[in-house]
Length: 417
Image (cartoon, rainbow, N blue to C red; front, top):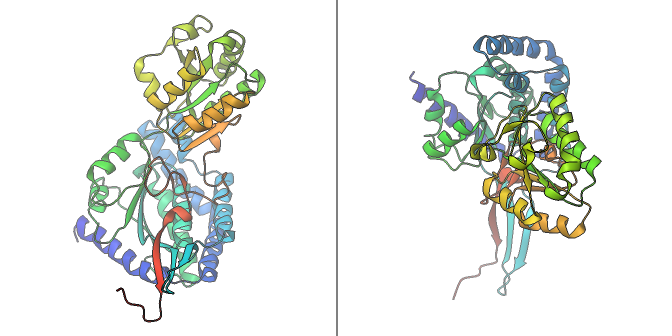
């Protein structure tokens, strides 16, 4: 069987399963999720062993510390996968929700309801927990999932998908509802992107290169963000202790993820009081700093280039710019950012409200770290990805975002005159 035929068979099976999934009761779907959660906990040692193979291979390939961190499955992360599935099971089922309804003057009842998208292909890199998150959200929302993880996590992804599928099938979910493409052949992604006869939407999670390729090659609609160039702007009226805490957290709590801060903007009026102490804290955490000319007058660091303002480092590297005004900060974010997650630290109400209104990003914060842009943190149970699109959905993509709308009309013989 050729690679094309293999991928086509997988997607065809997913399409068949999707026809059953769309009508499954919430009780069956929830039981499947709970089974999968128990299975993940029970298989902890097996999952850690599979993950060890991936980590060893990653070290041999010279993966960065940040990439290895994204790849690693600790006991806490395995428990978080299981707990995430339980949280998704406890959420309201979106399928069949009535979004709006009206009565036509002729008596017809017109309703708009949520229904599953159908078959969702998720293409991702590095983080094996995405396997459980994506499978759980797709199942709960009545969608079949075709998963294609990165080669660096192949053993982990296959092991997690196997445990999930076994638990789901035991609860009455059809075979083919959750499938992992197990080959590491890079051509598999290209073949998957041609399966518009079976797949309804592609959700990529990974680096800019992967997502750019998917957007360029896909025959299937794509929901994605290219990168996460996130900002924290420290306003002239900020609480400087709060600002320091938020900046350090946004950069260093987990630097290898898309909602980590990549550029720190600081108002000139408080730069001398704020930057030296904050820079020291960042450097003590192992962060390399790159600054504009005004920053370098206050902090010893490398010179930031024009390229730095648009770079998603996904590492302990931070660009810093001193701005003369609130307007300059907002203009910088809207020009150089990726419309993902941006924050202001300020005690001034007017500045906070203007920032929320004027910054054109999927998630905008006042006095909080950008690290909270996450489906679990937003109370969505988990996420299948974070969208910076403006069509269909924007921000963390969870249960509601995995549905579309259709009109349901009930009449009593009405005809149009």
